[in-house]
Each structure stands twice: as structure tokens, then as C-alpha cells.
Length: 380
Ligand code: SAM
Image (cartoon, rainbow, N blue to C red):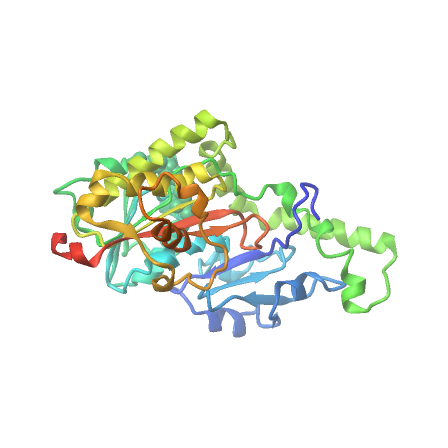
């Protein structure tokens, strides 16, 4: 249990940047990870007496992504410095995986900075694809530019600095995109706070039971805790920079009024995306755990005239790459949706939720909108 009462494992998730290397090369031939051992469960990594070099892949859900204990400092490694690996929470990797843009396709990242999802998209579409990364805030767009360069994605990504996504209309080169990823500003209520990362509370109390090892003296344990905490604080420099930038937008205000105004803004972003003439799939995501910004937004956009005119619906669970994830949308929060109860359940099943205690790096919501087949004739 952490100080905030969350019973959870908070590993450090790492995305391998497949524009520069592979999962196998990062793990087996790099001095950083070649001594790490694969474990089949997160608990194996946390319930050991001392922090060992373990890694945990969740390959069926998260390709090219793995987790390590948060006390390992890898920011000084060549892999990290050269942009071959990227520190990105697993939950933040879900939208690009769910959007699943084919190699060579054109994608718009409508709310892009600091750029974790932009570079993930670039890795998926590859050298023959194109990503338009739209960012309204100039300062955040500068960080986006640095991240794209570090990931080696400059040739794939076109950054539209200080550009409002809703101003992209006919005649703009991004207007022809087939896939859109929308990750607009939200309350950030799913973000794990630094206090949730107090690892001294995580792996030690149950470890003696799990490993069958004799207890350590409390002095020795305290020394280990302190050194783990010290390495935690250096390991997260860049994440903290990203988080700091994020916090300026995601200020933690979850009052009714604030959630309503965020929801109005999120709906406007999605409705604009629905008007892209060639769009086939659109993901919408938040790092919020509030239904007002999640299922309620889905209900509002599906009730819209443009959704009905252009045939936008929610991709069924069985068709999406995250079908094996157990936690889905909340059907009861879709009560404003004017559909049959059965259709409401299908739509809820199509949505993915991540709780803060799911060990994917924070609470999250993602859904994929698709244009229904009988409206394909509308596609230009
Ligand atoms: N997808 C990003 C990532 O994974 O690194 C995080 C995006 S953050 C939650 C939302 C971003 O959207 C902020 O940088 C904000 O400045 C930007 N934004 C908000 N409204 C926008 C708009 N109308 N057009 C373009 N960008 C916008």
C-alpha cells in the first residue's frame, strides 16, 4: 500500500523505438539490459528481497514494450540517450496500438505535445508513412520537436506548431489523413502522483514471505530504501519535465464546472475529426478516470448529427487490438446514448479503461471510432 492507499505495482515502462532498434536487440545485445531476466508476472519483479534485474513484457497486448523495477536508473544508458528506448507508460501506449495505422498510412495526431504518442505513431507507420503532429501551444511544440528529433522521426513527422487542430480544413495537407489520434487536454485525474511512486512501501514488507529469505536488519533495509529513492529521483528527470508541462494543462481541478468545460472542448475536437473526408479510424483518449471526460463524451459525439450523417460508430471489442484487456467502458455511464441496451453494452465493451491500480502506469481511457461499412460510399 502506498501513502495514498493504492495497492499497486508501479514499474517503469519502456517502449522500444522500432525506428532505431528492436526489442530483441535492446534486451539481448545491449549492456543495459543483457543481464536482465524475463519474469512472467509483475509480482515476481516486486516481491523479491532485493531489487533484481528483471524485465516483464506483456507482448500479447503491448508489442515492443516492457517493464522494469522503477529503481533502475537507465537515463544514463546509451539506449536511452540515443532515443532507442523511450520512457512511456504502458497506458499511454494504448491509443496508437488501438488505432493500428497500417505501414505507409497518413495519420494526424491532433493534440500532440510532448509527443510520446506522435513518435509511437511514427514507428508504426514507418518510413513510408506520414504523421502530422498538431500542437496549439508553441512552447510545448518546441518540446515535441526535440522528442521527434531524438526518436529519429523527423522525416515521417510534420510538426504543425502553434496550430489549432480545429483550424485544419479542406486544402490543408493533413486534411486527407485516414487515421487520427486525439489525446486532448483533460483533468489528468488518472496520473500517478509522485507519492504513488514511494517504492519503499512497495516491495519490502511481503518480500520475506515471497522469497523465503531471512529478514534483513532494519538498518540495512533503510539504507537500501534510501538508495532506491535516490535513484528514483534521477531516473525520472525527463518524465518529470513532461509531467510538469502536462500539469500546466492538467491542473487536477475536477469540479463539476471544470469537467463540463473539458468535456465540451473534447467533444468539439472529436466532432471536428469526424469531418475529415478520408478518415477511417479515430482514437480518443484521456488520462482521466472521470466518466464526464470518457463515456459521456462518447455518448455526446455518437448522438451528434455529423456522426449519424457520416456513419461514425465505435469499433467492436472483438475487432480491436486491445480486445484481451479485461477492463472495459462503463455501460451505465452511456445512459444518454439513444440506442438499444444491447448496442449500449457493445459500445461500452468497445471502450478500454485502465485503473490507477492496474500497473500500466496510471488511469486511462481509450476508444476507437470507425466509419461503418454501409457508409463507405461516403469515403472520398
Ligand atoms: N498526446 C500527447 C503525448 O502523448 O505526449 C499528450 C497530449 S496533452 C494531453 C494535450 C495537448 O493538446 C496539449 O499539449 C495541449 O496544448 C494540446 N491542445 C489543446 N487543444 C488543442 C487544439 N485545439 N489544437 C491542438 N493542440 C491542442
